[in-house]
Amino acid sequence: MANDSKSSTASKEPSQTRGNRHVLSALVQNTPGVLAHVSGMFASRGFNIDSLAVGETEDPLLSRITVVVKGDERYLEQVRKQLEKIVTVVKVHDISREDYVERDLMLIKIRATAEDRMQVQSLVSIFRARIVDVTTDALMIEVSGQERKVEAFIEAVREYGILELARTGRIALVRGVPRFDEPDGPAPTPVEDAAPMVHGHSEL
Image (cartoon, rainbow, N blue to C red):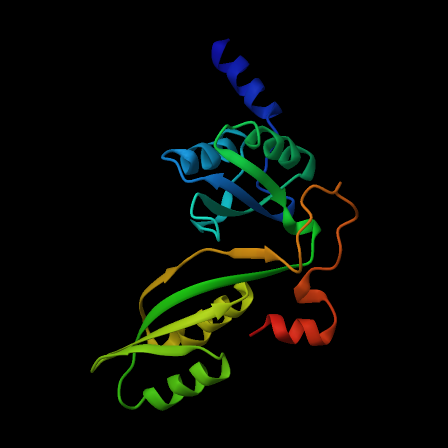
C-alpha cells in the first residue's frame, strides 16, 4: 500500500520536461553556495536545466547566472518568485519576454590531417570561427554564436573526427536598457526572428 501511495503522489507532480524554452537571468551576490541554491531550486521543482552559465558582472560584488530551461510558464514563474526570496539572490528575470541577444562559446578539437586542413579552414571561414591552436594532427577551433550555429558547426566537422569539445553554456543580455521592474507584458519577437538587419547582426 505504501508503494502505491508513493506512486500516486509522484504521478501528480507536474512534469517540466516539456514546454516552451525560457532564458532566466539572475543577479546574485558573490557568496559561496548561491549557485547550488539556484540550481537546486530548479531540480527540486522538476525542471531539467538545459544550460547554466555564471560569471561576474560589471559590479564585482554581483554575478549573473543565466539558466535555460523548458517547462510550463506558470510553474516557472513560481520558481522565479521563490528564487527571489533567497537572501543572496538580488533579482531573477525571465528575459524570454524581452528582445535579447544570446550567445554560446565553444572550443572544439578535431582531428585534421594535412589533406583535410584546407576543407576545415574553409568551414572555419564560413562559420566565422577561429583557429586558436594547431598541432601536427589536430586543430582547436573557437566558435561563438547562437546555439543553432554552434550545433551546425559540430555537425559540419564531425566527419573529420571530434577529439574533445567544451562549451560555456548560453549567456544572454536584454537589448538596450533593461527595465526589470516593469510588469511582464506579451512576449515580443526574439532577436533571432526579428527584422532581417537585426537577425543578421545577431548571427555574428
